[in-house]
Length: 358
Image (cartoon, rainbow, N blue to C red; front, side):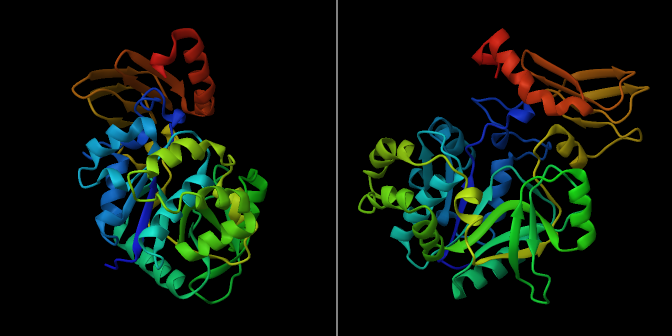
């Protein structure tokens, strides 16, 4: 386990597509979504800690979730938290992390990983990370992990790669979520991977990429070089972070950089972005009903995703392919085919019932 290895876990999202379980005050990354006994954040931390020293794992999150992170990750100290005072997408957050690591270790190599993904085969994941760390330590490259696609999924971005014999392949182009016809063509070509949003690079390489493509943002964060990892860091971030451009790493850096490479991987990845994606990972009964927490009787019911509070007794009759979620005094009953409207539903709930329910 190298002292030069670092990780940044992105844990600042709200996860509104998992409402009513995921709310502004308690987002999905802090929930035990699959009933394993650990939250998604805890699973991500323990997975990365198998290859990266625990003290080198940074958690990027909104300021409001500081206590939640420290409560769930008891091995993490306050100086490992990157507390965002404002929502500014992923590029500023990643640059902040890179500057913080640079001050600690100019030879640092870092992985940026979402906190809410599910990975089935952790050993293969670790081997993939080690291979990527080694490559980024030796070359001036920006790397990402590309998931071998199992279907023409239109919910993911795609990575077009140069199909040569090397394990790590040159990226030709990133494509945002395509329509079904285009996604089907991608799959048939054998030259496309799903974009998982997992990145690996040396601190030197990513800062060089910011210097070339987002110089104003780099200049802003360079003003804090003397205070990173000191008691004055928080004041600097509070006063300057919201001045940075609101832009993702994909649009700010990755679409312009010419030294991007991808490692094709297959370790049972799921981004757990919707109730239906969660349903796919759960055990099911003979009628394909999935249940998290509680106990249930299903009668003339198939393909349902049910999540309730522990020890709750539920009877579902005559429903097919529905999402049924209960949390405290909120109940959602929604056809799977309509789950893309859950974000709109949240907005209606906010207007009708108030902020306390979202």
